[in-house]
Length: 140
Image (tube, rainbow, N blue to C red):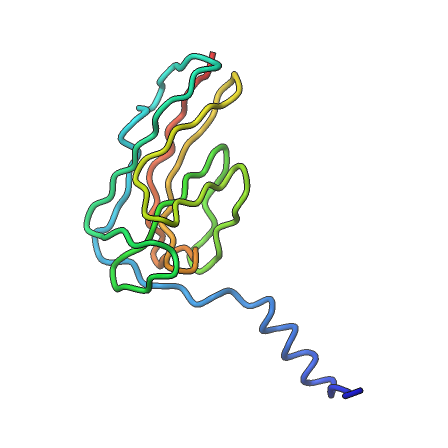
């Protein structure tokens, strides 16, 4: 069995906890939610469409490293991670790694926030972050 020197153990721990390298966002890039609009009241038990908009940047699927591109992540009742951080994948952080620009959701009754954040080919938030404004909806 091989023994690691203490410095190697510390270095390995540091590298494992270090943020991933961030991809630069193109100047003037922004994303937005085209529907639903802020303040929308939607019916419970009925799926609704959410469509995404993007300007001054292209969409590329996960794993495709191309300059000035990324893919959408829809945040539901969550805040975006900072630049250089990986976007989680869970029920509050939906990934659209195939390059989708819309989805259908069904949410439980109550107030909810929706927000987009662009991620690079590895789901890392760009620098500076490309995020939409939050849209607040009510499901009744």
